[in-house]
Length: 176
Image (cartoon, rainbow, N blue to C red; front, side, top):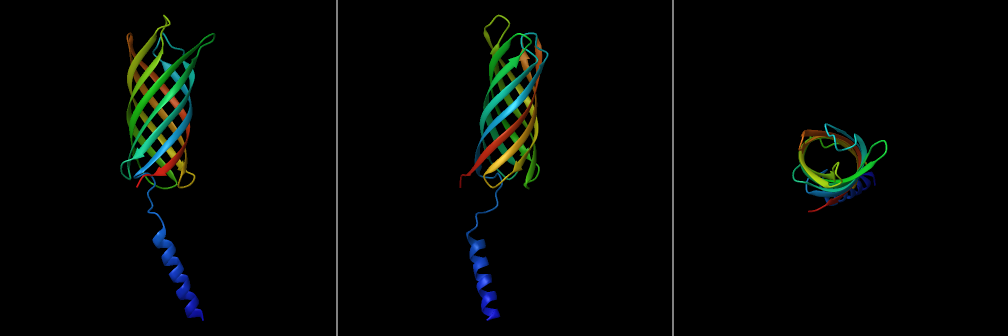
C-alpha cells in the first residue's frame, strides 16, 4: 500500500510539473504600467521647480536581462502662484540585474517634454535620461516598482535638468 501511495504521489507531482508554464519573469512578456511621481526641475527660467507626474506606459521583455519600456505622462509643475501643465513621452532600454522577487535595473532613454514657456506658447524640449530602479514581483502578473530618473533637456538658454522619483504598478501578460 505504501509503495502505491508513493507511486501515485510521484505521478501526480510529475504531471503537475509538466503542465507548469516556464519561469520567465520578463522575457517574452508585455506589461502595462501606471506611475505617480515627483518632479524637480533645475536650470530653467521658464518652468517651476517642483511638480507631479502621472504616467501610463507599456514594456516588453526582449531577453531575460533586456526590457524596452515607453510611457507618456501628464506633468503639473507648481510654482507659488501658478501651475504649468505639460506632457512628456519617453522610451528606454532597461538592463535587469537579477530575476528574483526583487529585480533591480538600470537603463538609458530618450525623452520629449512639452510645456508652456514664459510667453504662454508650448515649447518642445528633447532630452535623454538615466534610470535606476527596482521592481517587486507581487505575483506572476503584478509588479510594484520604484524608479529614479535623471534627465537633461535642451533649452534655448542651455541644458535643463529634471529628476523624477516615481512609484509604479504594472500588470504583466505572457506573449508566447
